Length: 108
View 1 (spheres, rainbow, N blue to C red):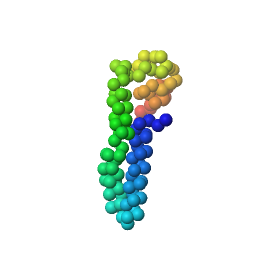
View 2: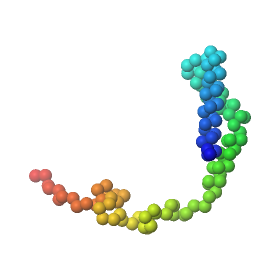
View 3: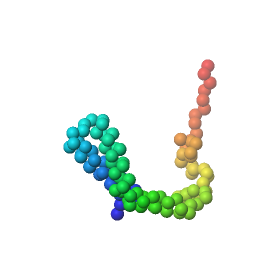
View 4: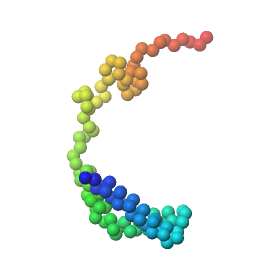
């Protein structure tokens, strides 16, 4: 089953293709064809795709009203957020995992 957003997007694309084809058959070409097709399909979709658009809106509102954790998603490894990575694993600020670096020699 398609999500409401995906269904609406597919219907909008199909409507754009249909309007473009009709305008091309009427003799319109080039950039003017695309511009009129975008405007025309947008206006037609306001009327024709009202129900799918309302479904997308309801899905967005329902998702926004879902309760969320105040601290964001729980860590997958069971550790506390912000704890250091295990030995040899790179931490967020250490691209090489904090491995020992050779001492730098002064230029001389």
